[in-house]
Image: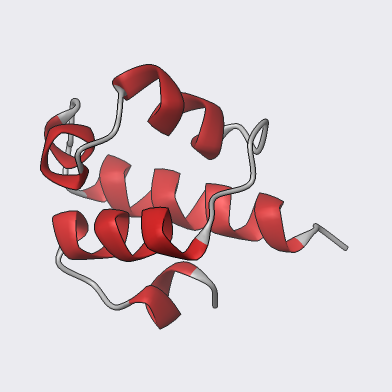
Amino acid sequence: MPSATERVAARIAEIRAARNDTGVAAAKARINRVTLARLERAQHPPNLDTLERIAHALGVGVVDLVK
């Protein structure tokens, strides 16, 4: 079973891919594109503040990222 970090990473990547997001979410969330890429590869667990900013940038709720 994937870890919580891996599930969140996959969900962020899935939403970004569906929207053909090429870095807009990172800019809107005020995080570095490299950081977002590391989050999507589950190399770095996001904190709650970062999750909130990413969710807002993607136009979804935090709960949608942690399903």
